Length: 98
Image (cartoon, rainbow, N blue to C red; front, top):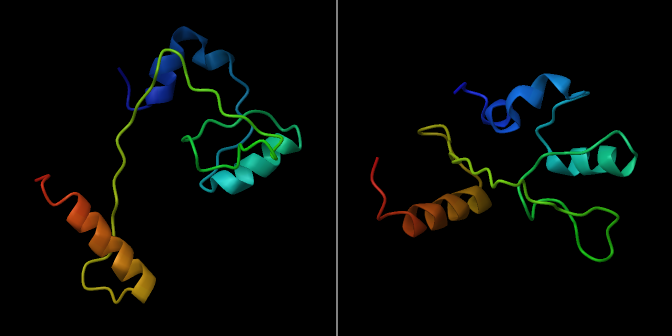
């Protein structure tokens, strides 16, 4: 297996894909999909796919899961909102050790 989980998931057909762009903001990817640029592979529930949206979410089959990491600068002064978010995350996952 490679470090690219999507390439592994697509298998030998990966080279057949016409990847026109990559993104780091799913909202922007959603706009490109609405404009007909193509499809976006993204996490569920981070783009509006409600009944008022032109977008829909279709899970990959077979299912593909990937871990996520939360990182922040040590000793960096966080905004009140970021500090509260980080505190909630730390409390929620306090039972998990590295």
